[in-house]
Length: 227
Ligand SMILES: [Zn+2]
Image (cartoon, rainbow, N blue to C red; front, side, top):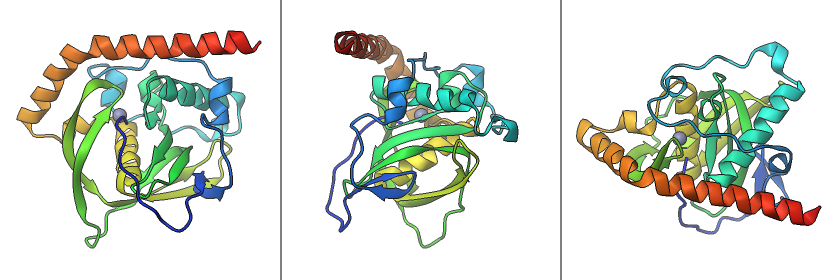
């Protein structure tokens, strides 16, 4: 998902990594340092529009799954996103990574494999906010989402995880889980706003791609200098 949001002031402002508070976390999650930048798929590509495969049990705890998550973190940062799903780097696998603030200014970082979104309780309000997507490069559109969301799934080693969030982070959890089922946020828009977003994307996409390339080049340059 793309786009940032405003911050408030809850009691515990510590970063949550895999749902757990930690005292400190690098600006870029450590996974990114091990990853390589992958191409981000764009609306229209088949892998984005079908239910993806569950990550199979035999993949848990493997270097293959770890390095995919590393790549996804780095690719998300280069594209200045707050969440990225497996099919957005062309993998037909149900997982996502995130580094996303909630409306209280708390940063949430982690990954969820085979995510399942808990059904929304009627008491949870819907909020109308702007949303964008790295696979629909450029535009944003207003979309109602639940103010609170909970996702259950697994970490890369197969341990169960339960991630919950409010506000903008709840939006991210819903957006990313949608991806793993082949659903983009524009699929939740009415015909007219959807058409408008796609038109804007056609006008904006090249600038977005150029910016991502510049970010990747800057990162590669910084790495070369550090060596
Ligand atoms: Zn997205």
